[in-house]
Length: 324
Ligand code: UFG
Image (cartoon, rainbow, N blue to C red; front, side):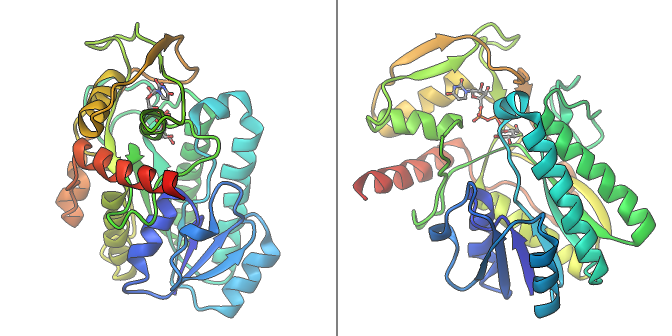
């Protein structure tokens, strides 16, 4: 049985939908940012906090958990600059409680959702796992702290772990049953699509004076379905002992500027956007683009879906939300 912490969230729920096809799954989620409706019905759902040792002790006593997959984090760069305590409390302190409790119950396998934000402002165009990590915001720092803790716990307590550093997750499940839904929404692609559906008056482009060809930030957008398949492979590698500890980037390897993403959304939807240029948002690096060569070499994973597929799937999901 696999414990998915944060399985009601955007990325966690997409993973659960795949995972239930082959494994028994328990989801622990406090629904602070997730939605119960996103959780696949085949999973057992327990509402609770990952930092609550009582709930964790109950779960680890009641079920034979082979691995924990941890998606339950606050993940907004801008918010983390405004409210760092929230990020160190939820992302670091609560995760320590989770790790400590699982180890007490002899659960040794852990998959951790980390982020491109650990790299800060990289000194290379294409980021590998060897690129220096110097996060520039509390969110990135909170994730990197857990990466260090995992390394130390592995040395001291034989914890097996895989860290997956996501670049910009986006898109929706092909069924259009689940998709990206945050409240409030801060992510670029859902904001653009909500605007193109008439739910917002305009899109703000945060900064047009970055050192990039068109002056707007470049990101590597990865389909949430591709992220889910990487997790399934990582889990297999841990459970079969193929890998004991590792860190992998998960991206497409292609960068798109904010302007290019808006243009692609306009092309796919056939609707023109109303764009406002505003100041830079705190904590945003100019360019984050991944090499995912390491996970391709070791586990045979690569992203299958491009920006067009990401936006087209997200568009189907957003249109469906409007009809509800
Ligand atoms: N942006 C705008 N206008 C908006 C929203 C976003 O211009 O209304 C810009 C941002 O400034 C940024 C880009 O669009 O340059 C992407 O922003 P998102 O908020 O969609 O995503 P981030 O790059 O800030 O962060 C996401 C995840 C993080 C993760 C990071 C890794 O939210 O958890 O990707 O690259 F760390």
